[in-house]
Image (cartoon, rainbow, N blue to C red; front, side, top):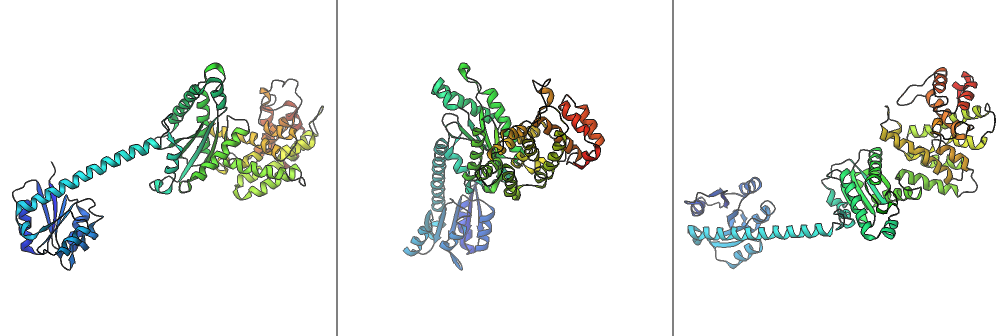
Length: 512
């Protein structure tokens, strides 16, 4: 059992001795610390916790009411007893106004049993009050937790998440950056309509379990409303956030089981990454916009807010009748220049121009039914335009990519095709951009298929990339490039296109 610790403040040595004796005499479970000045009082209050403070009304040149203000925050909730030889009602009232638990006349205080009884009573009342306060706080926390919890999934609800996003709730957040992942279950109305709301509730609970299984303990996992979920988690960069979100998308499709054989439950996901200090409901809205882009562009996909920004500009440019599709795409790059890095600008600028130049040389050497030259030139110049929606940091990595990083990179072909459609480019050009990384040996009609825009782009892009210094590899010479293309003839690349590139002399290839 811990000792009862009492702080005694009195600047009269004789009175202090008598009072100390009254408080501790013969009591082994009582510890009294006596001080005789304001400085000693403050030092003791800062360094130790006391069960009761007993002080003379006059601790010259100060009075007890003045000193009580000084130690209020240092010993919050600790009962104070003031002692005085005066019977002035002013002294009593002033002491009570300052929150003292009791007032004892000095003559009564010298009587050990009287003072000790008053101290015990003050401590008991303070402890009962503290116990009640803690009980009330527990009930309030329980009620708050219930009010902020979604009863179906057990996740935080939107109201709880909005409270957690407020600055005062995140003062202890030491994360440099945070990823916001917005998930919407695709075609969820179909589940409710065809299978009933009970089945819909089960799907929501399954989705919540999948999200929790992939989330870290400190992640903020929320049922935002309806079939929407929001996860806020530490993410060093956008690639990290996208990779995690894509794993979640895959696991939802694999683990959320729809009865009745109506197909897998897929999800459309939007992501964004911001400095932790900028987290807010506005940040969630950015991820929400990215989710809607994923939904509007086919569902079962992860999109970034950078993609939203680019596609919005593309649609705006597409409405300008004075510009051609090529001019609109060039203007898109101009408008995004301030948020693009050097690697992105190279891919949508010099690299695209070199691929376009080589593709033009190649098409002149192909026989038979040929693709439209203008469509090919447009697709070649802007085959990497989708990389404006990817992180510069990912594109500039000085190493080979992981499988997950490669999956993110591969999104640029699909998004690039969407940008071409948004600016009004011909369907053939957009299709070439969409398929310019397809392997020849994976095409069902490869035995009879003539060289397409996409197959020309695939080989020309590979050739120019090998001829260029990349963060992960040094440039190769023309002869090395031709040898590599030949080794993939009929496998990765269309045989006719490889033959046409070989027909381009080494000097022309090097110039490209």
